[in-house]
Image (cartoon, rainbow, N blue to C red; front, side):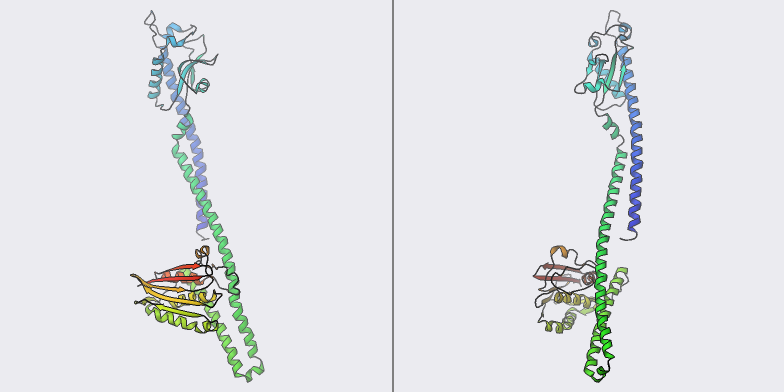
Length: 422
């Protein structure tokens, strides 16, 4: 995992946790404040309604007397006969509108002693209305009866929460960020674990790749110290050749690792020149001629490109082709048959390298160009490598603003297509 990602994820996660905590505390306080304000508005509206009910003139013989004057201390038989429902409804709506109470409600006058509704607009929330906290005793109007005016809001909590939506929104945002941080951490942990396995495999393979030629050099050097060897120039020449070849292997492996290190640091400099691609291909093919002859393999060419001079780094371009052809030979259980072709399109040169090797399944094709990744070769034994070859190929081609693609099928072979722009 990149060093700067770990503290960044930790910082973001801590900020998100703090943000969630602060937002939840603020939401709770904001809810309590808004609920208190809402309760106050409802109480003010109910007091005003009661006052208007008390001042209502029911049209008695004394037209100057209100309900408060006429009916105080009187038993209530039927309030509906005293207060018209239309009038009651109009003042309730008026007061609620005046106090900006704009949610659905049910209201009414009810008898506390008998829990029965006397007057109002009520439906399925009748029982809730009888127990509502928003109620006032009407003892100022009917002292001899325990009568109350109440109102019930079914959506009260949602209404208050909606007014604190920005805090809810901030909590959701912080939770999303926290979830993404955790998911990112898990992703990088899994990625780091996979990379650790790949690196361990790389180290094991590298140890083998270096140990084998070094052991060969050591053993051959010991043989050269034997006195009888001095009498045979052929054996001296043979052992010197072995030492030279194994030493070249070591140099080649070191160069590959150093090149990848330079690529990762961004310090690799390309020495581009206009080269004949067909000539380079022929040179690479010639390099494998002896090896192919020993295993009865062959390479066929079909150079259809008419524009085959490309501006590339000759050394790295040679290595790219060498890697691909070497893989075609190594990962083949039959006699290798490799076809190399070239063609042009409007933008550049296309090189195809096809083989009859073991092929690569679709899942592995997604990872084939990743650093340290190696395909399980199954029954092909003693094929070792660093998992750097195709990573190097892709990286270097991209350094030349080109692309590389693979088409492969198990037991039928693979085709690598390289595109390099003019």
